[in-house]
Amino acid sequence: MHKKYLPITLVLAVLLALLAVMGYRTNTRTAPTIGLAAEKQIYLTFDDGPSTVVTGKVLDVLKEEGVKATFFIVSDRVAGREDVLRRAAKEGHTLGVHSANHVYEQIYASEEAFLSDVERCAKVIKRVTGVTPDVYRFPGGGGAKRNTYAKLLQEKGYRVVAWNAVCGDEEIPNASAETLLCESVKTARGKQPVVLLLHDSAPHKETAAALPAIIAHFKSQGYTFCKF
Image (cartoon, rainbow, N blue to C red; front, top):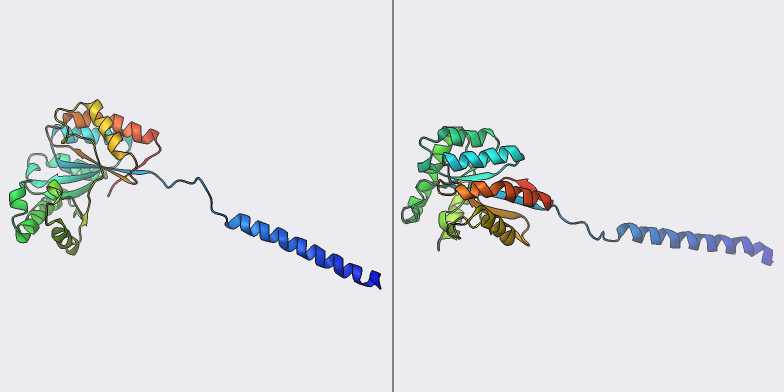
């Protein structure tokens, strides 16, 4: 009698063992993976250009390093520098609207004045480069009515681009290239993605001088350079 039931007992034991092994493997496959970090990204964004010398040097560095950036244009500064703006577009950088004249009192005088300023700048970019811009950065951050203006921009098809790190070329008077590098590293710490604010208008020669070191640092830290 006992010999009759022994094979059944063995089969049950084997099945239970197999189920236990399968359950272990299933749990192993579905366990969360630890230590996989998200891709680190940085956006280099330049305000207040174009300028002949500084924007030109910035474009030289970007080309040499194989990096794309985003330029927020002041359209009243384009006259006589059309070639610089066309070069930025041709080399694959994003051109965005910043303002027509960067005079806050005029830009933010009313909703109508604000939209007129945006349109003036966009028309110049389109006329000179053939590019229809769809990104925007507020001059001075947008002020008290930023949310109202942002809704108007959204209705016109624009994405508003802010920043979360600065190189310090406006915040620190007479900053050296080394200081701008240090400020970029400091203010970018802990940000993901990093949207770094720089300026390429005529007074910002040290920004262009600092750019190779800024790019080298973030490359060494494993960042991918992006544009809007």
